[in-house]
Length: 147
Length: 134
Image 1 (spheres, rainbow over the protein chains, first blue to last red):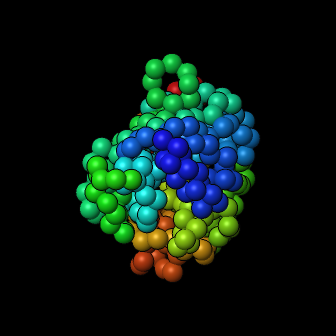
Image 2 (cartoon, rainbow over the protein chains, first blue to last red; image 1 turned 90 degrees about the vertical axis):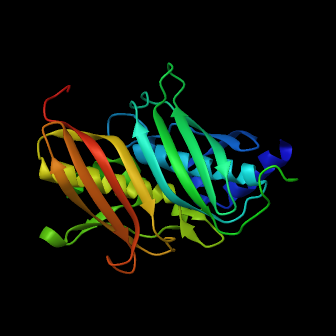
């Protein structure tokens, strides 16, 4: 767990965007990761709404999904997003941050499949659900091998 | 595309988006900035930044095409990544493939070296809001 948290932390420091938006690691275990973005005025999409931009949620989901692939592989190697589908189930609440959790439920030598969802902490319904596929550019150890 | 939308959106300003060109040649520009990097090793612009850039470009296109309406709401978006986006300016242009009474289907492509070499594309569905409160 600590190793995974350190992996997440290292990767975050390599991603200036994550630092600029204030992404925080929440949890990590093999094949899973959760991260949070706090509400902030310059992350609002539509002026006056106080609602965090869809594009910020998109970034958080892409980022945490990449983390889930890293924890599944046990290493933070080179991966690239192939595609991402996001369903915006409802707007986040005004002045609320968003937490996204991702599960890498299938990892092959070359491809990783990830599901993710984002919550603002209000009610049952997520703000967004997402499905992503990643290309593994430098094949690492298969799932289940020593990390 | 509506320049006002970019100026009114704090996140569009955070990204540094602007508009260039006139008429059919009008397109969105995401000038490169270090805080947009997602992978410092390559380096490459964050996939989520490209997603947000494409989405805001789609919203700006809808806002330009339907003046006076409330900003459309994204229902779902699909983003494809074709190649890494390097540390240079990125451009995007949106096309409204169909706009019905409630839903618009929009496609956006982003490129760096030229439109024939796209780095990412979005197709998405947006809820149109002709009436206040709808």
